[in-house]
Structures are given as C-alpha cells and as structure tokens.
Length: 301
Image 1 (cartoon, rainbow, N blue to C red):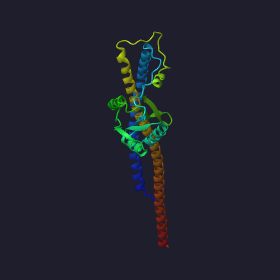
Image 2: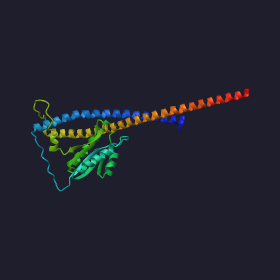
Image 3: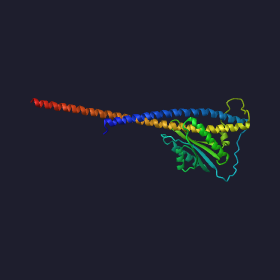
Image 4: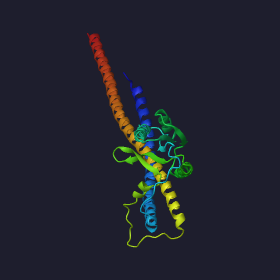
C-alpha cells in the first residue's frame, strides 16, 4: 500500500508532467496558427495565379493541350511520388497512415515508381514498404524554412522532368481535417497537360472585360507555371506541418485529460490514506486514554 510520502511524490511528478504537456500544447497551437495562416494566404494567391492562367489561355485561344510525344515509347513509364512526413514525436500514426495511403495509391498505377521523402522517419517506413527512395529532404522546422525546401525541390523536379527521366510527379501529404485531425491526400503535380488545363475550366473571369496578356507573351506562361508549381509544393508542405501540429495538439489534449484523471485518483487516494492515518492515530489516543483510565481506576481500588 502506498504511503502518504509516496503518494505525495507521485502527485508532484504528475503535476510536473502536466506542466510540460500544457507547454507543448501551447507550442503546437501556436505552430498550427502560423501554418494555417500561410495556407489561407496561399489560397488567395492560388486564385490570382489561376486567373492569370485563365487569361493566358483565353488570350492565346488555347482550348486544348496536346499530349507531348514520348521519345522512346519502349521505356517504362517512371512515376515519382513526393511524400511529406514528420520527424517529430507525439504525432501518433501520422507517418504510418500516410505510408499506407501512398502504397494503396501507387499500387494501381502502371510503371516504375520512385519516391522522394521529406523526413527520415517517413523514409524508413517507405523503404520498409518496398519503395525505391531516391531522394530525401529535411522537414522544415518553421514556416520560414519551407521556402528554401520548396526551391530545392523545384530545381530537382525541373531537372528530372526536362531530362525525361520522370513522366509524372505526384504529391502526397496529410491535410488538416476538422474532427479527425488530418487526412492523407494526393495531388498530381506534373505533367501540365489537358487534364491540368481542365482544372481551370470552371474558374470564371471576375469582370465583364475580356482578359488579355500584357508584355512578353512567351515569358508569361512559364512564369505562371513556376508560381503554380511553387505554390503547390509550398501548400502541401504547410498543410503537412499544420496536420502534424494538429495531431500533436490532440495527443497533448488526451494526455492532459489522462493526467488530470490520474491526479484526481491520486488526490482521492492521498486524502483517504491521510484520513485513515488520522483515524488510526485517534484510535490509538482513545485506546491509550481508556487504558490509562482503567489503570487509574485499579490503583484507586
């Protein structure tokens, strides 16, 4: 049975852990805010880029994008998956769920597959799943570190695509989801073909004035494409980091609830043990008094 001293030490230890959990919960909540703000800002920027693409297609009378002929059709199609994981702890099944989603999604695609992993933990899981991980990147520690990562990835993506080594690029990441915390999603990044053009077909021009391209037409579309690719990768990374912190926040909330329940049990046990100790002391005092009274009574006789 626990003594009062041991129970007091357990209560103090639980209080210390609760303080750490509260701090981590506050940090996770703060991080979620900055990443969600970045995602919201990207939403507005994406709309601007989309309008630019719509204006270009209209001004240049582009109604369909012809598929690029493959130089050597005998070569097996190569698909590259860019997977954004997490290297932080206390995120539950964040990486495992994403790995399973990548496996199920790529399983139905024909061709050879290779993977670029963002994070050492997701890289190990992907290797265990049988994927060929050809490139790895560090997970950004803040929203300011996302831009350098995306810039590096864009350079590598452009090099592989221009060489014809990879025909299709896909982005996999966890996206914030109310209620469940996050949801694994996929986005087709390249090639920019007719399927890509159709994504902008539903976007209506906001004014009655006809859109037109001012300046050098030849440099307009490449500039818009660069911004589109940058925004797609940045958004995926920011959403992944927001999902990671949402998962950690949920874990901290569960931990805080469990610690509070444990503290309630320990405090109740402490008070019961203390009351039992007081009762025993009172019983000893009463017993001693009765014994003393009997002894005095016998002496008087």
